[in-house]
Length: 114
Image 1 (cartoon, rainbow, N blue to C red):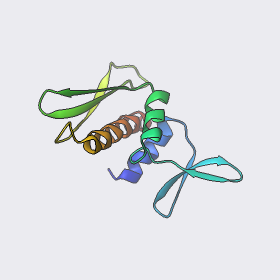
Image 2 (image 1 turned 135 degrees about the vertical axis):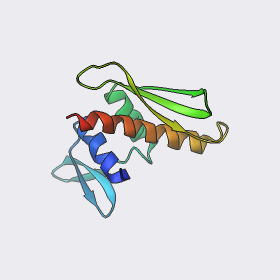
Image 3 (image 1 turned 90 degrees about the vertical axis):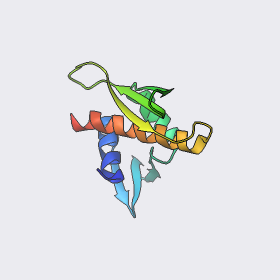
């Protein structure tokens, strides 16, 4: 699945209206304009998405450094997880990027059911 498809499904899960323009993901804010929304690259967007969808985010080192994002589907079949592995827990950029991607993947899984 492409990043654009992931973002579209994540937006659907969060009930966010959006348009895509020049490969940027934009959110409608009002008739006057748009604001860029991309939780794959923006920590604030990812955090707000996780909060809105009540996602559970934690890091562990079971089979390597990884972030786990727990989510519930609307049919409430128990908690499911998206897992992203990264190489070095001391490299904050990798941990942040993996966390954002896992959040968007979990949101996309919710969006698929709507």
